[in-house]
Length: 480
Ligand SMILES: NC(=O)c1ccc[n+]([C@@H]2O[C@H](COP(=O)([O-])OP(=O)(O)OC[C@H]3O[C@@H](n4cnc5c(N)ncnc54)[C@H](O)[C@@H]3O)[C@@H](O)[C@H]2O)c1
Image 1: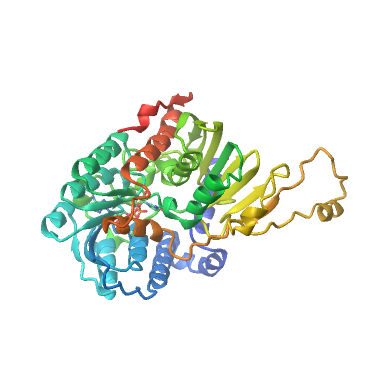
Image 2 (image 1 turned 180 degrees about the horizontal axis):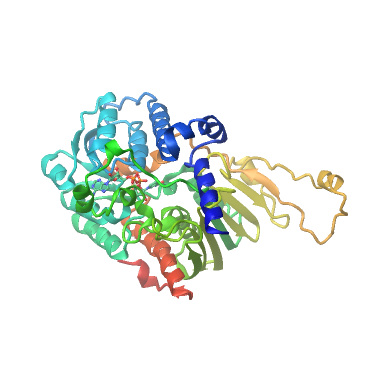
């Protein structure tokens, strides 16, 4: 496409962003674009969504039972995800927010401190996490949602200060960083949960324990595919009045405000979409296959976005080889940020059935398809593990189509649903699992060692793209 055309197309697509905006918003909002400018419009929409999320989270917090031990918590990184985690934590009984640390003192820090005070949490605001650790002696736990390149320093120093830590994925942008986090958790004996929240999602747990573990519904899994397709979104920005002074940006490792807001696209700060999005789902490949991969080949590149402001690949396609206890598996994964069609899901295919699953409650929330040759699943339906099947209407389809049914075509498999719905915010069960572990009442669902295995699996994809040849994993690569 010619440069001009591409630019126009980008501007058009940007007008359709930012993500999380629906069609109605778009139609209503487009009229305001001329007045505010594209960036102002995106910023205004983002604030509206943040407000809506806060209101949703304002569901009254359940009172903690008398015997629930209070946990004193701090948040480091009060950006988009810090806000999502705070909203979920406000719904968990027995937590007391003591501090919020964020270098964007003028906006994110103030916003979350103010929001917490409306919920009667008197949290102190800090710019420097070391000052926070020095002064807030009563903290039991710290939740970290800073950009990936800060995770290792933040998590290690908090662990060394005697705090339990919940740290967002990707555990670190480097394997050295991730390894030192595992070591710090072991040395200090403190808990380190990594934010792969699907590991605590009741639907994923049901599929893992009941459908794959007990009922073995899929038979032998031979292939897996999954994706996160995301529509083009405008780069993130900030209004002039909230711009961080240059000296402070540099002090915290950002060259300018654009990089500060869009750090995930920059080498040395984040890992691009494959790490940002793929890490969630590739972690599920490892978990459900009960194994880490032996090899990965990958192709990817920056096919669409502006290389001046996007260093990582916007399009990635990867194939992993697994040698599972049941036999070899090929697992495909793709992520692209130029078209959001069919969103995000993981699809496990065995010789007796298929499991299509997603964290999204709206799409692919859990479908299981029985291969026509597989033994009947009645007992699992009766046990409530699956809904009764929706029989595919072969005859009806044949009547609709003028083509004569080809006898070599496989009959469509029956579709069952996974009858588990998560009504809480997506991250709440994983945080709940962490705080239960802090209280000595649970084991972590994603301890540092698992987060490390996942980081090794995912970060290798970027390496394989650069190498242009398949790369192997040795079992010891996954151990610290
Ligand atoms: N689990 C999930 O579903 C999920 C979803 C989105 C993001 N994340 C993860 O959450 C983390 C944050 O992502 P985000 O989208 O909120 O990014 P963001 O840029 O919106 O927020 C990051 C915040 O950290 C602050 N910050 C930067 N450096 C800091 C430092 N040295 N000390 C204190 N504060 C600092 C920034 O001012 C900003 O407020 C990332 O690791 C990301 O991968 C996880």
